[in-house]
Image (cartoon, rainbow, N blue to C red; front, side, top):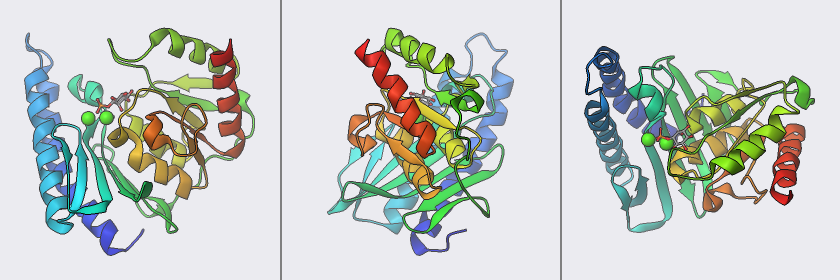
Length: 265
Ligand code: IPD
Ligand code: CA
Ligand code: CA
């Protein structure tokens, strides 16, 4: 584990918000059978978790700015630090009672992500990383997968929600990756997709049309686990591009080549 004051702040905030989320998920499972469904209840759970995170982070680091999914941007007095906070990543899963979602908090310092925490409260899996200090799942040091052959690889991806992003482009990209990869997965949480690349469960992952809070924490996790992350078009810093491609050195390079080939076609 990483025992820095910064990590303590981040982990405490995330664990606090997770308690409410875990309780609310139990209720969501009951609400599936109601005609109206759990939509409003989930929005409230999401907002509550975000308020808990916002309050804890603002209290511990008063000057830092925040980019929050529900409450937008809060400008702080310290212009060099920004939190990127997703209180519930994997909302569709949560809404449908699928136990695969996470809280994600990343810290940006002068344009670079320097720390990240992703917590899956159902599996009790805490992924943490800090620049120069490594990446961990609970107490285990993480490494990206060592697979070198795309034909053995399990590749994650994301689908743009209805009305957002380009489905035809994704279908072209997916077609190219499916033709080469051992398998593909759309798991439904960008934060966990990157955490899974960091711990070698997925060999690679790409997605477009993201927001910074979806993937900020995941970027540092993958890098500290020895992996590569760029935008889906190969830009070194994915944050501004709002897209990601990731994997170990070999598979990341191959993934980028496949995405580029489709783009050019
Ligand atoms: C979404 C998830 C999903 C990704 C979407 C995101 P949300 O975040 O990360 O995996 O495909 O692009 O918007 O809405 O569940 O916080
Ligand atoms: Ca969210
Ligand atoms: Ca999200």
